[in-house]
Image 1 (tube, helix red, strand yellow):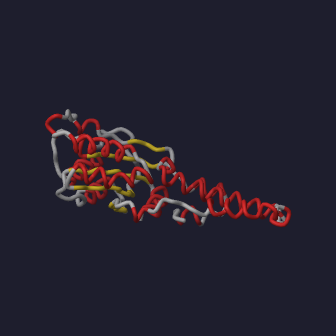
Image 2: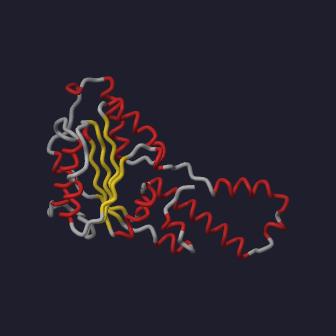
Image 3: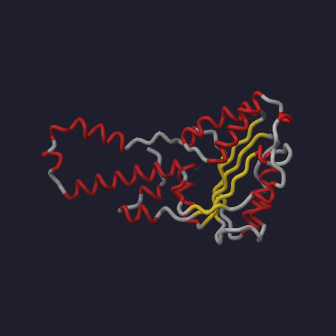
Length: 235
């Protein structure tokens, strides 16, 4: 089973809940910019947004995890995002895949793309990191294990009393101890960034990306403790 060490080390459900803290997010994909450009250019636009003091809901802490994917064609981006969106559906990846599928059948000049993107790229505040679907599932797995352990501690003879249900219990435990999410199999590129300021985070973001023009970025930013479960899950 894959879930963060921060969750694995939580001895109680209260401690587990405390590991899920508020994070901020920025997201951008290649089909919401005014003209076709590289993922390196997209990373620079994200860096510009991080530096911009006028943007609402700016974080106060700048540790970050960047999830991104790039591809040479719409079809290859859509294919790469299929497994990502099955295991951990994030809005930016879902939308990028939808556009990529359309572009596989249509020429780009037949589609209408937004302009004035720089004004629409705004921070989002997530009340806790468990809004990320894969982390939410990991939280549920860890929480269920703690509930099971608490029950066993409270009723030491439960296995004897329910011996007739042994097979069902084993099957249930197998479900609890399994987690289909495996970040290494998704093909996502990840970058954990330790930053002490918006400027240092922006500088790190500017070094990401490549020459592919089909891409999507998801950036999570916050306290080191808040970002840690995401880093542990995806790295």
